[in-house]
Length: 154
Image (tube, rainbow, N blue to C red):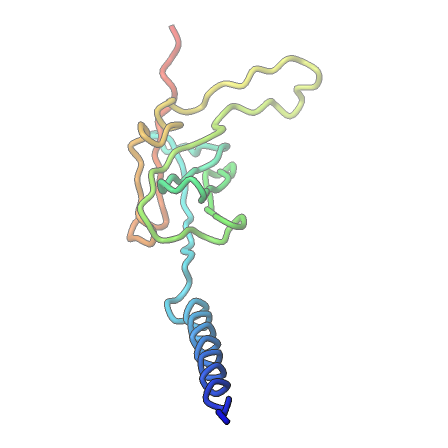
């Protein structure tokens, strides 16, 4: 009669090795390489030094499944997040552009019509034309983004 012990022992050993490998992988992902998200903060201002007071800083890393962005506050400051408002950004090189940089209605605008105006040159709204690129993590953090005002209408 054949013993089934070697088969059970082999199966147990394989299962134990799989569990050890999985536990090692999870432990390393949690702590071996450090955080995979890096804080990104900065300011957006015009060439004259005045802050851009509204909009969103957008990061394009070429991955359609990942979106990182940060709201621009009235003082021009921003903090970028990917999965949460301020959780940071994965390492990489990003093309940077600005969205929603439109004038806001005055506090007392009431029922009157309001047409928002573009606050920045349109090239800064396109990742391919903005000319802005940053590396995360990098020596450029905190970021300083300088934008131009839109061309004057004739």
